[in-house]
Image (tube, rainbow, N blue to C red; front, side):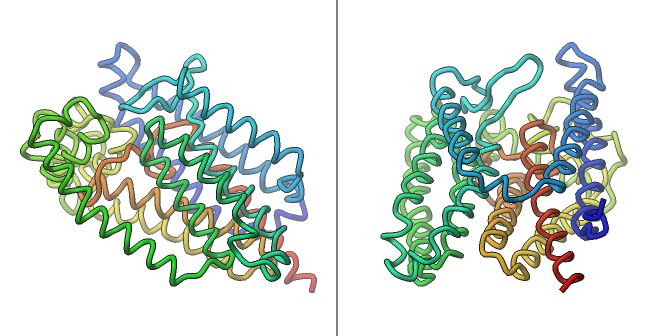
Length: 384
């Protein structure tokens, strides 16, 4: 009970508002597809409500727990073995959805291991870096961090092989930012990002365009997404259908929207209206104003998480906060980038709003830990 005095409401309130609003939007976006699939219009609503309620239980548990348990070597070791086994098993037994074999089917629930790996990498890498602080000073960065880098690269590689480009990129971004915060030379980081950007713009995109013109991309799902990004209206009846109908949804909504429940695009025109493209449906029904309000609340969580990290006197806690903020930021940008046509569609959900158990529970794990860290800081300042 003592810890409740130090709840960070700048984190908790936006989380609760977004999660509950997400239930409302999932119902609106999924009612038609629920009926079309032979089920009830409220089937996705019931599932998402259960996911969110369980997520709140997870947040409460993580908030109250002693953070030392997250650093227990045995727990981290066996959790790592479990994550590795799950990712390997996916390559041979995974359920394929949207071109990626990234799910295990457990009755009515689909479990996506790559989501939970995000949380595992954050807490494992934060602990690995913190335990090597003295070695970093004595032996240099590469000698000290080579083993964690190899392990992280292997995990990201397994996610990429599903193939899950969005999940691999988000996990890779989390790792990169946390390694950068550990003392990696930022000049090399800038050179790496600059080189990667030039490679994509000058080599990969032109190559994909040429491949699509020759007709070789039609059977490769990941290439089709890039083709759709480059010229969606040319492929509006095939691979560009999602992006084109996303544009229509955004155009229909305007500033104030057509009214909750009145979306046209969710009735069969826009695939994945309750997951990848729920923000397009939100913008169509409730307009630009509401969409910006949702983004602002999420931005508040991200900024607050970074501030908690900056104010912490513990390198371990700071690294967790930076990893969590990166997770939320990159996933948001990838989702919005796909909806707006500014990035290729990567199949990632919008945090707290999109339908999905694995995503909801992973976000709950992260939010619980950040609330825990913030409460510890407040308690320390109050009793100092």
